[in-house]
Amino acid sequence: MNELPTRAQARAQEKSAGPSVARHGRLKRHSPFTTVAALLLGVLAVAGISTAGVAAYATYDVAASLKPAVKLVNAKGQVVTPGIGAMDGAFNVLLAGSDSGGGNKAYGDRGENLNDVTMLLHVSADHKNATVVSFPRDMYVPIPSCPDGKGGSYDAMSRQKINNTLSYGGLACTVLTVEKLTGLDIPYAGVIEFDGVIEMSNAVGGVDVCVAGDIKDPYTGLDVKAGENTLQGQQALAFLRTRHGVGDGSDLGRISNQQVFLSSLVRTIKSADTLANPVKVYALAKAATSSISLSESLNNPTTIASMAMALKNVDVAKVVFVQYPNHYEGDGVAPTKDAASTLMTALHDDKPVTLTGDTGVGSEAAPGAQAPAAQAPATQVPATQAPATQAPGGTSATAPADGSSVQLPSDVHGQTAAQVTCSKPFQD
Image (cartoon, rainbow, N blue to C red; front, side, top):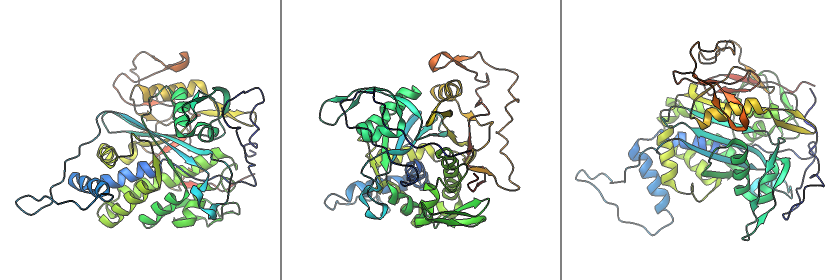
């Protein structure tokens, strides 16, 4: 399969009061990895500390910018810190990845600010499940009216690629667009740049990834050999940015390749080697919180710590990475409505999801790895089911009566953090 075609210029019939929607060539401009990892993995890292430890970290970060304060201690001489509990109920967090490079000249001057990676984290109300949805950058979606930052607003557009939203109306526009697309309320959001990825991979001493064959991508500088590779620093960033080196050379292949890395990173963070090492825990948490531009609702260490406590006991098998259902259309992709409705209705109803399809064009199961027991074939639907629930757009999603997970169609790709997968080299 050929790579996803070059981005088209903004459609002439779309009139807007805002800035023109800039595009960049797919071969001369290589898009970055910028992802939900900073928040998801940062809070998981913080969660490895005890409740008091999380509070101490949050208190320290707040106090660091203030005048030295008097420390209060208890009768045993131990520092007294406020208690922080888990965030109540379910919550959604969106992270957009800017391809601007954060002003770092080493990444070049792109002259525009596109969200080439957009991910949504949904944590269930019982804090037992976490779902991370990746939205393909070249997916055509409606963009609602967005604030222009000067008290006015930009006009809505009926059909544009989702990665234009960050340049069109900032992070608020990306959130509004994803809310319109998914029907979910998203109160928390952030933007992450290149350097944060490097710092996080360094903080844990590198991330082990499996590669099914040699990959050498001149566009990102990635050079890895078949087998297991421990990646950190620039090579970790190159691995997550590569598109030409994996799968079919498209952004869809890059999404599944990124999930190979993210799943391994989640396993690394949840391992005893990391959680028992306060230096690694602190370094990872610090790398995450220092590399993201956060919404006002999230720009608070106590809020992040509360999220950490909510995620603390989520099993890696219940951290699901899923690609937003899509299909090729024109020079991009379009949402696959029925499958998307099934996924979004499950999240709206706070149901965990079960993958029945493969991991995507950019990855495959590691040799000898067994599929998780929860990943049943699509034909194995529970015998007892509740009536279909109405999904956005008029379609329906079937939820098992016993409250167990909703099975996604087999054409929806992804993996759990418990699955060990390998990146697939580019095949023309």
